[in-house]
Structures are given as structure tokens and as C-alpha cells.
Length: 512
Image (tube, rainbow, N blue to C red; front, side, top):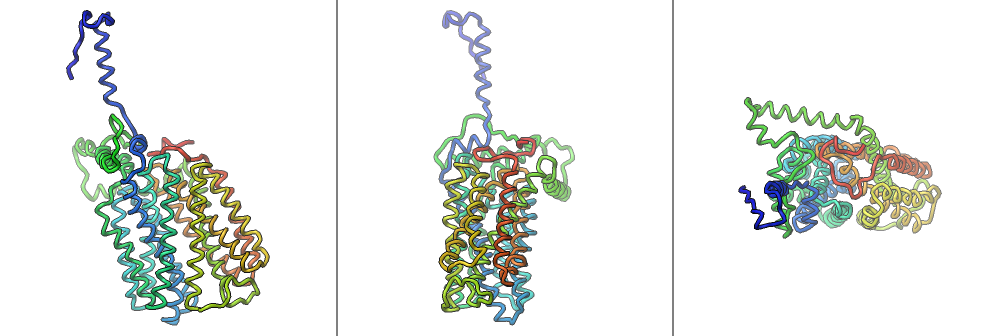
């Protein structure tokens, strides 16, 4: 760049010819302004590009919701077909949750070290392939194995959420993450409707096969899914991240901030420059070994002094949320039973056995919609922590009258309200958890918390449903109340609020 120095005659205000040189140097420095990924996303706002990302990630959650909802319909049909015992029927659900538990940890670690986008392909192949194979299972053992593999694939659900989260500007994050959760509710409602049609006219094999279609759709559109620019920045690949941001700006008809993209999570320097400076490049095997070592180190980082408190509190929150959510669903199912050995309230009069199950599940699934609306109203106005506390307290209020037997109408209203609130707390918790962790371990931390929730889902039928079946409805309700209070305590102890805060890229930049 050539510096032109004006003479004193051209500009009488300049008394020193070197002053203009300093001014020009200052202007040159101004050309190298730096901006962060959050600055870029805020400048481009939430536009069409984010809607496309939302559609793909939402399809992933629809797929997961449908595969889990199958458990409400297939078990009894398979039990009747193959003359299974009650424990064998229960195992069909247990193996799915076990697969999800293992998958939640595995996919979280893999996505934080090998990329979000690479996980999508593997998740899609496993979930769709195992889902379709389960429809052709020749015997009980093969069905159990295939459903366990489906569960392992479904364990990657948190990766879709964090991937979308990393494209959303700070000011829009709470509201849009709640809207993202509507895809889960849409999946549950759609699966209930599909089961109502398919199971009454065809059989469970058709339901398993048709329910795998969204997973195949994820594979079909895989080529359109970009890598997370925040992940690329964290890995030092700012050039690749900038290319994606340019596409976002083009689709959104917006402009990137002037200057150079930087990240507080850049690992030393750009990966390309690192490889070029390395006199002895790593072999492919050595590179994979190094990445796996990094993967396990990111998991153990969850228990570092700066994160262990957050990690343990999140595990308590997710365990309690899943335990109470699935408990309410199962409690509704038990109280809706036509066989009432304990003399408790029956929610529905005797109807056609063929349709009553599908109608009950469809109606209770609708309770999630007002729960999502409530969380959308609260999450960005009062913050994540207060939102969860409010909804947990409301859930306690809805549950408390059920310690004694109520009329069928009042019982239905109370269970509907409790499920609405627990849906809201799970939604806000799913937003809060990935915001607490840096990009370098966001999916690892969120996946581990989600795994704790899966343990709650596995334990709940053994404890809560056993109490209801044993004519101890009051004890079951009191147990739900105690678990809910435990969840409130964990939320109160969280170190900080994330409302309006930028996502962090490494542990060093987290708040203490």
C-alpha cells in the first residue's frame, strides 16, 4: 500500500509531515478489524439459511420422537404375536433406552472431535438401517438387537440440537430453540396418528418400516447440511468457517461485518498452516489415535474443577426431568386402564379396545404444545433458570391433588397440566445445557447429561409404575413431588444464567 503525504500548502492544518504518516498507519490498522462468529451471526440475523438448518435438524428430532413413540404401540402387538412374557415385552423398550444411553455419550464425544456433520451420516445409516431391519425381524432376539441399534442411533439426537444452536444469533436463541423443540412434539403426534391408521388396518411391521422414512430422508438431504462454523472456528479452520458464513450472508441477503473472522477457541493456529509447518506429518493411523485421545480427554474435562459442579447438577436436572416426564406419561396410561384393580379413577369409559390406546396417546401428546408455548414465553424474558423453576413449581401444584383420588375430569386436567409443565422444563433444560459448555466439548457435555436423562427414563417404570400397579398411587405422586423438588434445588445451584450470553469456544473463557 502506498502512502501519500500531503504538503503543508495543500493542508495548512498539518504542521508536521510525519503526522499524516501516523494517520495513514492508523487507517491501515482499521482495515484489519476483527469480528467473532457471534458478531457475524448477529449482523446477518436469523434468516432463510437458518430456516434450512432448522428444517434438517428438526427432521432429525422428528425421526427420534417417532422411533421412541413406537414403544407405546409395538410392544403389546409383538407380545400377542410371539406369545411373549411381560418381562420380554418390557425388554423391547429397555434396550432402546440402553442404546440411547450409550449413543448419547458416544455421539457427543465423536461430534466434538470429528465434526457435527460427519455424525449425521453415521447416525442416519444406523437409525434408518436398523429401523428397517427391525420391520423384517424373523424372531424376538433379532428384533431386540435391531431395536437396540436404533436406540444407539437415536442417542445422537442432541447433536442435531447443538448443531442448530450454533447457527442461531444470541438475541434469537431462546425463542428459536423452543420452536425447534416443536419438531419433537410434531413427531410424537404424527407417530400416534400413523399408528392409529396402520395398526388398525395392517400390522406392527408396517409401522416399524414406515416410521424409518424420516431417517432415510436425513441421509437423502445429507449433502446439503453444512458443518458448524463454530466447530470449524474452534478447530482453527477459520477460512472454512468464513466460506460458510459467506453462504449464510448470501442466502439471508445480508452482509458480514468488515474485518477478519477470529475465535477465542482457535487451537494455536489454522490447521492448514500447522500441517505445512510440520516436518514429519502424522500418518492417518496416528492422526486417528490422536483424535481419540482428544475425545476421551474432552469427556474427562467434564470433571475438571471448573466444570464438575455444572456437570453433576445437569445430570441431576436431566435425570429428574426424564423421570417425572415419563412417569406422568406412564401414570396416565395406568389410570386410563380399563382394568381397575385398586379402585382408582379411570380416565375414560370403556371404549373399543382397538382405538382407545391410540386416542389416549394422541390426546396426552397434545399437552406438549401448550408446554412449548409456555417455555417460549418465559425463556428469553425471565431467563433459563427462572423459567424452569416456575414450571417445576406449577408441575408440583398440578400433581399435589393426585395424592388422593379425584374425579375423572379433574384427574385428566391435572395430568394434562403436569405433562405440559414437565415438557416445558425439558425444553428449556435442553437449551440451557449446551449453552453451559464450550464448543470444544458442547456435545460431550450435553450428551452426557442426556444420558443421565435416559437412566431416569429406564428407572421410572421400575419404580413409579410399580407403585401404581401395586395400588400405591399416593406414594407414586409423593415420589414425583420429591424428585421435582430435587430438580428445583439443582436449578437454584447452577453457577450462572446464559440468557443473552454469547456461546464460548473453550473452557478458559467460561465464567467462573
